[in-house]
Amino acid sequence: MRALILAAGLGTRLLPYTTSVPKPLFTLNQRPVLDLAIQRLIHCGCDKIFINTHHCHGQIDEFISRHPFKHIIQAVYEPQILDTGGAIANLQQFLDTDPFFVINADIISDVDLTQVYASHLKSRAIATLVLHDCPEFNKIQTDTKGFIKNFNTPGGKGLAFTGIQVLSPDIFLHMPKKSDILTEPDPKKFSSIDIYQSLCPAKKIRGHVVKQIFWKDIGTLPSYTQTSRQCLVASILNLPAKIIHEIQINPIPGDGSDRLWFRARHKNNSLVISDHGICLPSSENLSQLQAFVSIGNHLETHNIAVPKILGHDPLSGQVVLEDLGDTHLASMVNQSQNPSAIIALYKRVIDRLIDFSQKGIQNFDTNWTCQTASYSRELILEKECAYFMTSFIQNYLGKDLLFESYAHEFDIIADNALKYTHEGLMHRDMQSKNIMIQNENIYFIDFQSARKGPLQYDLASLLIDPYVKLPDIIQKELLEYAMFRLGIDSKDHKEEFKECYHFCCLTRNLQFLGAFAFLSRVRGKKSFEAYIPNAIESLKSNILGMGSLPALGELIKRL
Image (cartoon, rainbow, N blue to C red; front, side, top):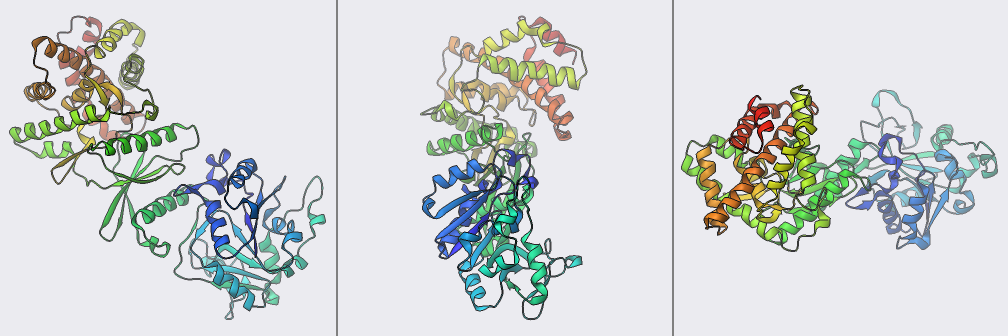
C-alpha cells in the first residue's frame, strides 16, 4: 500500500510563522504533524510514502533523514507548486498499480484509515473521499448511495472533506500526463477537486462518511493553537482522541506579560495553560518558554512550592500546569481586616521566599535564564532606571527629562543595590499576585525571570508591593523577621542588609512605575494605572533622606 502526503504548500494562513518553519513541521505534543500523518499511514499498512515538497523543502528533507522509517519515505521536490492534482499526476509512475492514499499534511484526525481503504476496495469508485459534518467547511453534497454530486453546495449544507482520500490508478486516465504537466518554464498546475467534479455525473467519486471523530485543520493560527492545547491536555489526562471535544478550555485573566492564560476542564480534572505564543527558533518567546519550563522543573525537584509543569509544546508555546485556583496573596490581604493575621501570613510567605532563594540556587544552571544570568548593574540601569525615565517620566508624564541628567545618581543606586547582597536565587517579580494560596499552602508562580541575585530584591518586591500597600510599620516588622530567619543578628550585618534592601526598594519601585506606565499606555491594560499612585507614594518614602540622590530626590518629590 502506498500514500502521498501533500506538504508543498506555502502555509499562507499561518504567516509570518511559516516563513521559517513549514506548516508540516508544526508540532503537537512536540511531534511534527507530518510525523503524525506518517505514523498513521504506516500503522494502516503503508510500505511506501511520498511527500511532495516546495516551501522550506530542505527542512522537510532533514526531518525525513532523521526519521526511523526513512527507508520507506521519499520526498518529491516541486520547483513550482503543482497544486493537488498536479502533485498526484507527477507521481503516476509510482502510484499506478494499486489504490493509494492521498492525505493533506495539515489535518489531524483519528479516522480509521484501514476501514477507509477497505471501503474503497469494495466500491466501484475511482476516488473515495472521507467526509464528515463540520459546519465551517460543509459544502459537499452526496446522493442516497453515497456518491458525490457537487463540491460547492451553497449555504453550508452538505458535508466537509477531511483531506483524506483513497484513489484508484484509473484516476490517471482522467488527468494530464506528467510530461504535459512539467512544461517549462510554467508547469500546468491543476486541482484534483476539478477532476473529481467532472467525474461526479458518472458516479465515479464516492464519499465515505465518518461520525464522532476527532478532526482538526491546523492551517490557521487559532486552529493550531487551540488544537495544541486540546492535544496537550488530552495527553496529560490520558483521554482518547474521540472525546477530546469534551475538554472545556476557557480564558482566564492574565498578567502584565504577553502570555495568554486558560483553564482546561474535563469532568473533575482542572489544569491551567500558559500560552507563550508561537515560539520560532531563536525567538524571545522561545527563550521565555524554555526558561519557564527549565526553572520550573528545577524548583520542583528542590521541593520549592511552585505549580507542577505537566507538559509543553515548544513550537506552539503551550505549557500545561497544575491548577492552583484563583486565590492570590493580594486578594487575601485586601479582604482581611486583621493586621495580626496579615503579618502571620506574610511571615509564612517570607519563610517560603527564603526557601526559594537558598534551595533554588543549589545546582541552578544560569544557561536556563532568558535575559541575564544574574541581577547585574547593566540590568538595573537598563531595565529599571532607564525604563523608569523613558516609559514613566517621558512617555507617561510627558516630561522632557533625560536619563543622562540623572546618570550619576542611577549609578549610585545600581552599585548599592548590589552591595552587601544576600545572594541566592532571585524570583524578580515576587509580588502578591504571583503568590497563590491553595488549601493554606503558599505557591510562587511566574518564575521564568529567576536568576542569581540578592534576596533583598525579592523581599523589597514583596513588602513595597503597590497591589497591597502594606503600612510602613508592618513593612519594618517583616523586614526584621526576615533578618531573624536568616540568622542576621549583629548590628553591622543588619545595617548592611538594610542598606542593600533600601536600594533594592528603589530599583524595584522604578521598575514598577515603568511597567505600569508601559502596560497602561502602550499595551492598553488600563487596570495597571490604578496602582501608579501607590508606587509613587512608596518611591517618595524610600528615597526620603537619601542625601546621595539630591537630583532624583527633587524629581520624585515633585511627582
